[in-house]
Image (tube, rainbow over all chains, first blue to last red; front, top):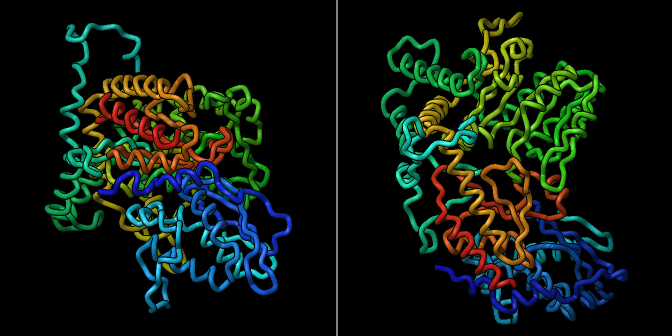
Length: 155
Length: 421
């Protein structure tokens, strides 16, 4: 049986209540909108990626449940200073942590260690109908990275 | 309908027998289980109700004994299946007090019933003709009319609701015009619980020369419905929201109206004869029922109606109204809870938001306590927008719920407040 506190860890509750990097970034050169029509969660992700492909700034605005808000907040924290390739690697690892499934096309063993604080989301795996809440931010990140300079929507 | 105005001592001669909710609960095998280690509390009845043993048995008996395709069969099983299917039609006719069996069309659900009217009645409309709905409609009574507008150039008008979630009748009346061809309105709101003054709405619409389609998906399991007394032109319902199976529903329509409709879908059963030069359509109700239908569906629906009437809708109504008042009080005692939908005439729905906690998180915590509620926009996004919330938590009641269920809901909510407060 899953426990309430496995899902709602203090860190998650904290970021859910007081999300970090919660602001619009006028200087962002990568943006994407994430929307989950099922529950109405929506977010706008702002990235500043420099010429060397390093994420310099990450911020967001939007509304959603504690899981989705905390996931986005903590993602923006971990992204700063990462290369695009490292960010995509994190996507794969986070995906495996939450769903228990290795992303398609990957055969190598993924090391969850560098997810760091994000490992608090491991409890989500026991709540299949909350997986989308936790991964919305990350799918939005992928959309932002895939698009060049143009804002895109995941819809 | 007048039962609530009568005052009779329980047990007095002529008084209705006391409603025995514990006996009713034993009729629903699914209720006897634990979820996340807790006895199940099922409060998602506006989404779908559970099914009593008698409904489950009627469906499985049909497949065990009588299954065959209906109509035109010469063999015994086909005769039995046809008889069972058509008996069910008669049962629905009596339940709604329609004039004749041919006015009962079996479809997949209330959604398809509304789509049939939009499609077939819609073919008779001209650009500029108006359809009038309300803010509190389910998406299934919004989108078909938007699609019709795109197809046929009709104009969709929306009557507003007030802060309690009640239709503003003066505004509704003001929006009726000589171009209004159809008023399509919900009998009981699924997300607010508001019960609309449908008799008055029908009268106003008819005075303006418009036909009326009532979406009765939520209403039929909570209120006696008499389509002739209401003078409704169309009435739509879904079996699964009234203790019957999923996948089957009904469109009631007045005969002269149904007669005037062009066919909805083409296929077997809806024809008298087919050649490549000319096809002659069948008579009602078959003309609007193409293809082999869900045969076990109406049979299950009949058993559900038998079940409802065996309890007597008036006692179910009293029981559910008591629960609604009790649940409303419990919620009002909790800090940081705001009810969405406080209509003076409200039934079976407690829709609310919790300060600082997203409905999705509330739903997960309640689930861990064994309490099943629905969270989200409940297919009524315009209602959410009207109240300025992205979603609500909805606890919806049925004949087998108890005060204890609501105590469990309140206890779960105290946990939510503890985590998120």
